[in-house]
Length: 293
Image 1: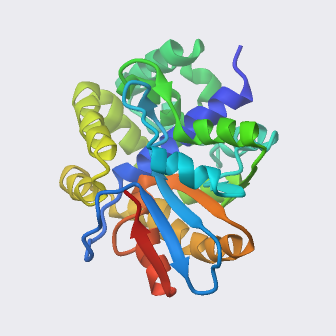
Image 2 (image 1 turned 90 degrees about the vertical axis):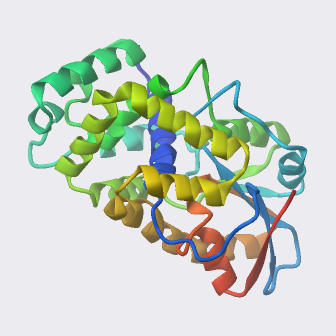
């Protein structure tokens, strides 16, 4: 039987994968190869860190550097994209996933593509696509993200949630579930459906692209990661809605949260670099943001 929690986790994985996959702005500043960054300056008088995650990754590729463990341990609050220990979040996601105006996946997709989607959803959830027929296509994609990963899937966000519970640290979110869903809803349902179509109709090639992206992540090459994405993906509109606009909203919230107590921020790695990335936006606000090796 399906529950809200695993469905919510799958959708979260997909959002981060998309956050990386559609990152296509210009890169003016070459950044160090690091996923962990220390934020200093302004009026901060306590440690604050920023870590880039990938929401969906094979357990074989999952790694947790000692520097990240230390930064986490020295922080009093953990801030993810969403407050993932909120017991209402799974239900909020389920309620917000539906399309408006009678749109459904079988109307937006070609019959052959919908049949493949139905088969993949059945394989990954135990039920067919009919149960999710009114979901926004990009959220429906989250139900099959396992197809792109070899072996069992892991998540940095879920790891940090468990670590927070063990250490009795507070977990907060940079945005609400509705805000995240609204970011997706800025993209037309048909464009979302076209993206979903491309993913499932060329599954083998997209698995290779995903693996290359994961390799760059594991090697912490966030600048090379962006260059690779620019070369292999389009999607400027998606980058604006899923990255740029969200990053700009996050900055004031990050500044406010980090001023309160030692904070460990963990967001999708696609949000870090680039002209509109979190690192550059924080620097524009007068903060020193340096790589931690």
